[in-house]
Every structure is written in C-alpha cells, then in structure tokens.
Length: 435
Image (tube, rainbow, N blue to C red):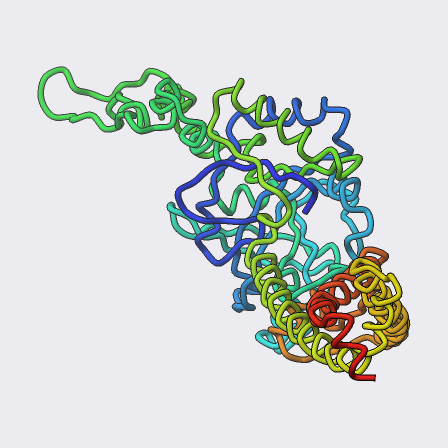
C-alpha cells in the first residue's frame, strides 16, 4: 500500500480496500494535481500511485457472473510503483489504452462457476457500477489473469481496471468533482442551482400552427443550437481526469516517514482543502486491525507465561539457596559482604538463563526454518486472513532473537531477587550452626 496514503475526508469510515457497494461514496481527493505535485517534489518520495477504489458486478453475454472489488489505475504508474506485486497466470499488462481489466484468479474462478464456461484473455466482460445515479455499465476486455504475490482473503477479490473505466462506473464527472472540492463558486457549476432552461434550453421546440400569422417557418434550422447551451450538461457527462480516491506514496527510506508526513500536512494546510494522510495500516483496513488485535492477544499470553516462568524459577532458586545457607553463612563469616552473595546468586542465574535461552533460540530457529521451507497451510479463511495467504512461511529475524535473549535475561534477573533476599536474611552465626 505504500508508506503514506493521501485521501479525502469523510464522516463515514472507508479504506483502500473497498467493502461493498458503499465504496462508491469514498471521497475524491480535492486539489489532486497540486497535492500530487507537492508529493513528487519531496526528495524523500520514491514513487506515487493515484488509485480509485470501487465495486462492480460482472456479466458476460448478459449472464450474471458475480461481483469484484476494483482498483482503477494507470497501468504504467502501477508497474513503476509495484513492479513485483503481481503474478500473471495468463496475459499481461495491456499495451494499448483501452477499456481493460486484469481479472483476479479467484474472481475468474467464481465467475466461471456462475457461467458454467471458461473466461480467457481477450474475452469481453460487462461491468456494472453502483452509484447515486443508478447502475452504469461498461464493457472491458480481459487483458490478463492475475494473482497478488502476497494475497489474502480480501486481495483475492480485487481486480485491476483502467482508471477511466472505473471513473465512468462511479460517475466521477467534472460536476461531481466540483461538489467534492467544495467552495461556493463551484456548487452552482455542479448543478445545485441549475435551471431547466440551462439543462434543456429555453426556446420552444414545437410551435402552435393555429391562428395569426402561423404558417410553416421555412428558414433553415440551426441543429447545433436546438438543444440550447450544453455546457452545463457537458459537466455531468465529462469524466474528471483528476478524480482520484487515493494517492499512494512510497518513500526512499521508511525512517523518513515522520518528516514526509509533516511536509505533506503542511502542503494540505497551505492548500486549504479537506484531505488527510494515513499510513499503510489504515489502508489495509480490517486485515491490519485484526492482525494487530491478534498481536496484542499473543503479547498478553506471552506476558502471562513470563510471569509463570518467573514464579517457577524463583521457587526453584529458593529451594537451592535454602539448601546452601550453611555455605552462604560461611562465606559471610569470612568477610563476604551482602553484595558479594547477591552477585553470586545473580551470576549463577544469568549463566543458566543465557545458556538454556540460547539453546531454546537455536531449537526455535531450526523449527522456524523447517516451517519456512515446508509452509504451514490452512484451508480456513480466518487463518488465511491472519497468514496473509494460503500458507504461512515464518522467518526468524535478528530483532526476534535479540528480544528473546533479552527477555530470558530479564526473567533470570527478576527470578533471582527474592532468593537472594532469603539468603541474606539469615545471620552468618545461625547459618553456620546448620553445618
């Protein structure tokens, strides 16, 4: 999804991944051309991708074939932004500027079940878009069958179309763009105060031939003017080439996120439009929220296990220290201070924790390596949503190793505190009497 996502603001919730027919209400980015120019001028920005998000029904030869979520893009820009994001089962990116679709492998499979016949590259499909003005139909040619490299349950339902087609399906005309951009000057242009005479002309098309000096007017008819002023109507039918729902921004370095976001927010404030910036987690929508919720649950479970481990290790050390109280008393009697006894118990605990912690990390690395090679597969859609695909290939990172070792050391240190205090409570004289 990129590092940053520029979008319009709305009272309704929405995300990069469309969720049903309501995706038609995703706001358009106001002052898009100006904000895109600002983004591309920043040295921290590597690439940008304008994107439209929507939903459409699919039919073939007037037979219903299901539904698909759609991303509308300019194909060359998509290739530059995400060169390795797609695998082509058939076909490829269209070479000519035509109404075309890169059909999801999953969507094609569902459509073929509905149609009881195959869909191939070169076939024509009819897309039906939902909007306030009703159903709009557009015919597209299948340019390719695709699969996202990191597919999930939601991405499997997304097909990619040319931006012009999706604009037409969503009714993103210059008039609707004027309303989206706001401002009193543009509202009248958008048609909120447009009269019937402006839309249909004021001259009468039919004259009453009865009475007076009627007769047939033999003067030539000006067919270009017969409908009156068509400029207003043109704004309702002319597609807005600057109408986009999102602008995905990829950075040269993820560490520049805060700096770039600050610069873009300053540009939005300077432009004075109602737009916002979000990160990839917002763009991923429900998938990211669910993944983070699961992560929190697992972290709580790990915390509980750590507390149990501290209690178990602490009790074991208490027993060990109790058995060695005579030796500890002797050490203190010959001059060993409390700090020496405390450090002795601490170092003993740390050595054990580090050795066996390292052993556990090595064993875990072997298991993760085997799981990565074999892949953990599941047919359950909920599990696939968490995995981000049909199979999970876990990878061991350096951060995970360092975190595990640090957690092991911390548990060892905390576990040694109480046993050390138990040993130091006994006076050297009492301790030596137990010999």
